[in-house]
Image (cartoon, rainbow, N blue to C red):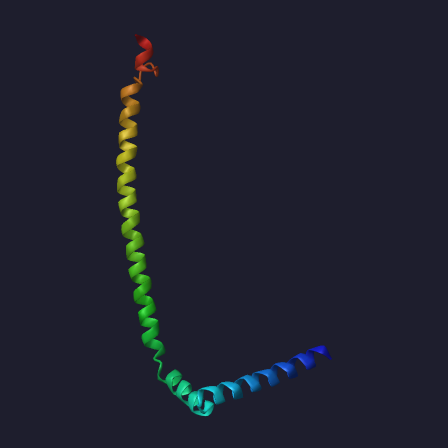
Length: 101
């Protein structure tokens, strides 16, 4: 019973709000609805899809470029660390160079 009362109250409040808006703005909501419906019919779904695909492709290209740059920087850092380790430890003894003094 509460559900039905809630639905009825919602419909009445919505209708009163619509009437109040129509009176306050001095517009006929049927005309507003017709304009909105015409605008929705004019929308080209294929064009929107193409724009979305272009945006995704651009974002993917930016991410790929960023990842390539990051990989190039990390590869250089790994090489520097490997060289530093080689300079610090001799392969035959595996002891730090500083400890043989």
